[in-house]
Image (cartoon, rainbow, N blue to C red):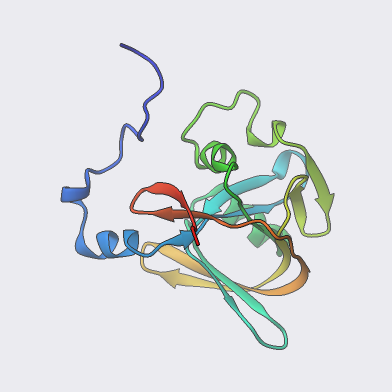
Length: 171
């Protein structure tokens, strides 16, 4: 039988993953989508390692692959948007992660608004507009720190990633 794999075909089997990576998998994380850039320079990446620090000003931090297109775009523009994905938006996450084919690129689908922080998903209910403050190496990635300049808050539950799968918060 041929077709698209249910799981990533190149994923390291859980038993072969290091203990730190397996520990990280046990932390349920909200799935965010980071987007930056303008026109043909737009880029996006789902990021589960995102943290918000309350304060004046508020900050957002995330671990990004320094070789990713979104890292390049946000370091060039100095601005980006962080979306909190909701249940039902798993496909959007998979498209930006490169796990499913998207002829014409991931920005071709779903509808986008251009903002001063970069492209924002038209159906986004919760997102933040951010200004880059700092980046520095951290583990295999780079820790990105930014000031939160704008917040749009919706009421939907977040999409959660736990132990290699999407899940939902249940009450």
